[in-house]
Length: 165
Image (cartoon, rainbow, N blue to C red; front, top):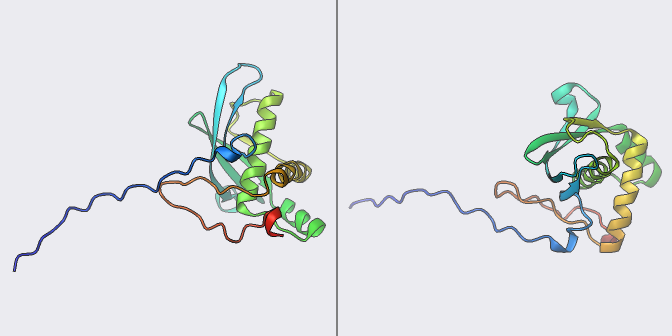
């Protein structure tokens, strides 16, 4: 009996679901105009990385691609502790990406250097931007899922949203 071998082709990526419902309010994939140059910057969330492992810092680094160049927003780990103390709720990875995106958009609009590779937030700034994101979430009643990266999706069944509280 002769064996039939099929060539293994790369599986097709999962279809991307358009996120138009949240396009104006959420911060994992957004556009912002640089205050000084007028350049349109396309910012896309890429990863959350615990900075203890990479640069021995007590922070979580949120990576964005800004017009194809990496830009990092460093959020201090103490902000997670403070949020838990204040509200009893935690900052999820997905919410951290939203907070960092909100911060990134705000600093570029205010005229901070959009060419810098890393921006560091204080605990107060994290909590302030968290509140701003939560206000927007209350208006949409749902936290959108992070984008599909290389055909891999993340489970979102555990993410607390105002509609699930």
